[in-house]
Length: 115
Image 1 (cartoon, rainbow, N blue to C red):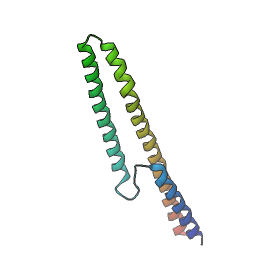
Image 2: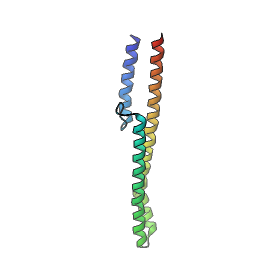
Image 3: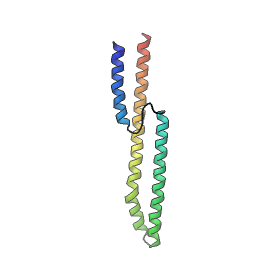
C-alpha cells in the first residue's frame, strides 16, 4: 500500500519535471548528454552572433562610424546572447534539482525495499 502511494507520488513529480525541464526529454537519451548538446548549441549561437556583430561594426567602420555599428550590434545581439545563456543556466539548475530528486527517490525505494 505504501509502495503504491510512493509510486503515485513519483509519477506526479515526474509529470511536473517533464513540464518544467522543457527541452530536456526524460527517457530519450541521458540527461547529461542533452545538457552538453544544449551548451554546444548556446556556444554556436554566441559565436554566430559575435560574427554578425563584427560584420556590423566592420560595415559601419567603412563609413567612419564604428561607434554606431558597435551600439547597433550591442542592441541587436547582446540581448539574444544574454537570454540564451540565462536560459541555459536555468535549465542546468533545473536538471541538477531533478537529478537530486531522482537520487532521493531511489534512496527511499532502496530503504523501503530493505524492510
